Amino acid sequence: MSWDFKFGIEEEYFVNDAAKRDVAKGKIKEFFTSCREQLSDDIQPEMLEPQIEIATKPMVDFAEARSQLMGMRSSVGAIARDYNLSIMASGTHPLAVWSRVRASAQPRYGKVMHDLQMLGSRTVLCGMHVHVEVPDLGARVDIMNRIQPYLPLLLALSTSSPFWQAQRTGLLGYRLAAYRELPRTGLPDLFEDAADYQRYIDTLVAARAIENSSYVWWVIRPSLKHPTLELRVADSCTRVDDTIAIAAIYRCLVRRLSLDTKLNAGQTGASRAINDENCWRAMRYGIHGSFVDEKTRSAKPVRELLDEVLDMIEDDAKELGCEREVDLARWIVARGTSADRQLTLYTEAVGRGLSSRDALARVVDWLSAETVGDLVVRH
Image (cartoon, one colour):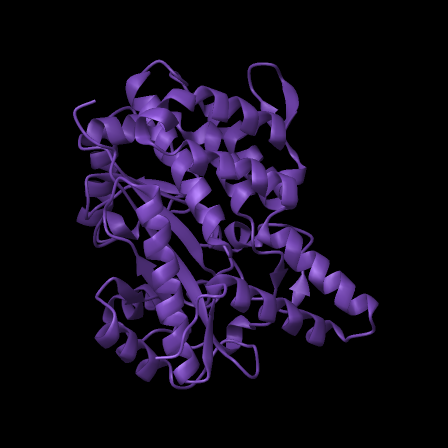
């Protein structure tokens, strides 16, 4: 190909009161200012006050990406400690109650919150996004259509949101279920070409329904700022290696679909509906479920689909130098996702006689520690 499939990763974190384990209500402005002063402009506020987003530079090497993510988690975590705060990577917060969470003071988000009303207040959610370079808009729209059958797998691997409003949800990935309350979310429609997609965006902008395409929040979308296709389906991954595995698989899939323009060609309305069903199955069961296979009309276990996908992108992983990183996904399936670990910790704590809230506090402790690992150092 005539481009390198450069990629960038964005991670959203909750900012917690370290003592209370709930989302923070004080010192957030000072904490964020310190982050910007000591680190870089790659750290941004989010729609709700106790959230923060970090972003890597565009790059081609996953070892560098891992190092950069670990370094930023470490540095942001250390600054948080100075304010008796902590950061936490998970799709939902085990203890947070959305009605008590304040909105961000950022002007853009003020407009969004005015439009969304209560739905905006309920987005106490954190995701992980991956941008992969695809210079041509037509190719981005085409790949956006054809990559949809693989999105449920990436969601299942990322699941880190089994709790909501201090309760077990029964789902492994509740974040996307809550996010679907918002307009312009979920799977995108199947657009005929770039002109069809642009017509959709231009019509909404002309009608003043949205300001620009960044107000379209599908699980995958062409980026407004960059010549990239942006993956948005994943929960915020507690473990850095999970982030890297999912990003590497996604990058390889984009390359594979760029090279093989017949792969998944001819997606139909039925195809999209089946992909949507599989997204639900990923939310509900995570890596322990199965997905509907349109061709065989059978249910395929996540592990089997993962093996097929890794076999399919083997040459792409070699070419992009990320064979080790894509193989990390097998480890996710073997030892479980963040959601699996959270539920185990919660069940064990309740079994020892702790109250539900105290058990959830133990989950928050693990999430906070695992997010920064052993890397946090005092400034």
